[in-house]
Length: 138
Ligand code: ADP
Ligand code: MG
Image (cartoon, rainbow, N blue to C red):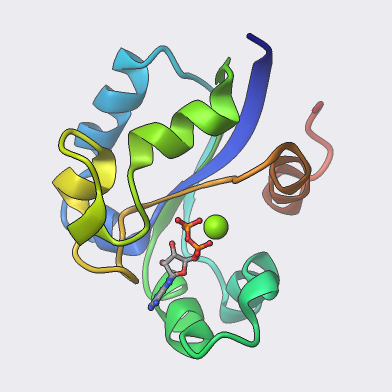
């Protein structure tokens, strides 16, 4: 299994609800190592650039408003098969469809306010890591 880095964000809903500790506990139990982290409120423009692939979707305006609505914990995580494994631990986009024990099942409020982001492939992980942590060694 390759050691991979991935970009994760504990989204503003989960930070506001006091779920940072719950989520980090799950990540650590799953042997993810934190390489970098920053707690900060994204600007609307940063959220729009980050989610640019979704710019034509009907939820884009609402999503980018939500993502810039309060502090979020932006992290680079590393682990064996980290990209795919983080997605598994996160659970389905819609918490109503997320498997028991997943972060979204435990912490998410709705399909939009769904607690956590994780890169979905090696190329998006590379883009997203350098988007928030320019200059970091990939
Ligand atoms: P994921 O985060 O699981 O990779 P997507 O890439 O499809 O999901 O969508 C990006 C984010 O946009 C989701 O995490 C969620 O916050 C939001 N989103 C996705 N689908 C919807 C929807 N139908 N309505 C509102 N928000 C959505
Ligand atoms: Mg996605």
